Amino acid sequence: MRALIERGLEVLEKEVRGDKPPKIVLEAPTAYGKSTAAPLISRILIESGWCYNFIHSLPLRAIVEDLYLCLLINSLTGDAGLRDRCKKKEAVLQEVKDALMKAGIDADSVAYQMGETILVDEKDEERRKEITSKIRKEPLFNARYVVTTLDSLAYNIFRVPVTEIFDARKHYAIPRARIYTSAVYFDEAHMIYEEGEDEESTMFTAFNEMLKILNVAYVPLVVASATLSKSSEEHVCGTLSNCKIIKLGKEPRENDNCIVVQDKEFENCVKSIDWITEFLEEERLAEKVKELLESGLKVFIARDTIGDAIRTYDEVRETASLKDDDIVLLHSLMTKEDRNEALKKIRSARVLVATSVVEAGVDISFDSLVTDGGRPPSIIQRTGRICRELDKCKDRRARIYILKNNHLNESVKKFIELKGNKRVCWRLPYETNEYMGYEKLLSIHDFHKISKELEGRPELSRGNFNEMFKRKINKELERSLKALVSPLLISSGSIKGILRKHNYELVRTFLAEVFVSDPNVTSGLNLNKVGFVVSLSKLDMLASKGCVNGLYVVLGERGNAEVKKIRDLSELTTRRGGIDLSKYFETIEELVRDRNMRYRVSGTAFLLSRKCYEDGRGVKL
Image 1 (cartoon, one colour):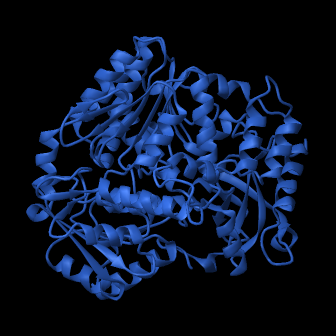
Image 2 (cartoon, rainbow, N blue to C red):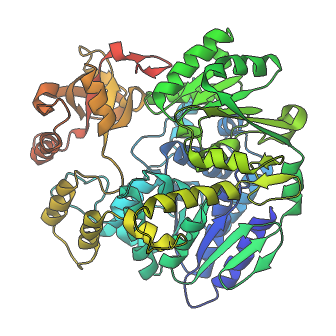
Image 3 (tube, helix red, strand yellow):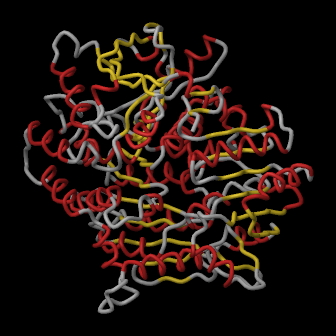
């Protein structure tokens, strides 16, 4: 067990003996084992009596699936198919299993919740049924250990049950009771702080209110990330009472609320890698990848936008003359079936081109990285996929290429300039004699954000993080969230009014489902395979390109569904051509009120024309 995790568990053992629930910020580098530590933490909290259930919250659906299937179900069932697919170390799986079993949690007690259904891709029908029978989705959080998206957790906390968002009745007490008797583990928390760095961030506002609610409710909390900045640390501990920060450092030290742990074994391990960081001109990308491949290296190319990812995939494939199995494309505008096929090929592929869908929490390893430099925490997370398995890292050399293009962040440029003759160890937060640590990049990024916030306000100090976060809060949404949770009881009508006021966007932009099919095929569709979700802004973009046929109601089981068109796209668009949210939500509410339909309806989805979708590559942008 890593030194930081071991020390964190020791602190937790001490904290649970107090009269206040533990509140911990856990900071450890990528590939250190934070997610794996969650079951160990759950055992201590459950055995101590501070909670009965455990909720593991993640910001991305892809990470939810990986953690639930590859760590929890894999460890508890010993399924041979999952062992082969996930490639987790047996020692880790045994440690997780032991912790969960000691807490009284078996495979039947573990569930997941997100806006998609986890699919099992097995050619053998009996094997597929066997694994599927072990998978459990729990929208009401009715399980001892739930892995969930942040969105699902937030909606349930704010009295909007995710299965009843559009229903006239809302049984909000059930999931809230589960949450308030749980401990909550907020994993990959940096994404919350980096999501939409505009003045009014919806996700940050919701997270801020969640922290305050759970703090008052005496819910044990753990906030974990590799890339929490100083400002993020201060915000969490300023919001929570009795908060302890546990992080990795060059020398061990301890004060009232911060414990710095030294891990020389980990330091020596990551320093044994020869880290090379260079800028790369955008126009040289494909040629550089070809050079790396000719040297026998595996390459991860991380792009900030889907359009750039698809374009890069085409250019690299042509330049390096790669076959289908040599290169993988992965982004969010792909059907679940195509994404699963891509994930199956990742470990054997020579090149992966992806957006942020594999940025955090996904256990893959490459020799070199070519990345956009638009978001400093993203760069650090992406380098966590490089030389993750040291014995398979060619020449023990990690090559990091940051693209010089319009996306390049000023903080990244400044950081590379400041490093001078030193190299950057992207797996260590602190500076050593040989290497610059990534913490400096986060500090520069913080400084630039604060400087932007304080423009024209000389009365405020540059260290005033609290003022920056106050300005980041969406005040109107904050008032609405308080109105949802403050009364002892609230009517479904009042909840509906607040949801409509904010276009159902309490955490981030509302997500709509689309599916790829021939308009003439209306039955026997597996929406779990041919469907995916998109933000309404992306739906507008697809509609403007003539890719959206109309809105359909999904009847029966999603794995063998019948679809029926209920609105032409023209009936749901504004004069400017965008989706009219009022008409869209009214249509869904009408379906829910229709007694002849409501018990047959399993959802609604927009039909995406096949001319706009290419199998294996996703939406044509």
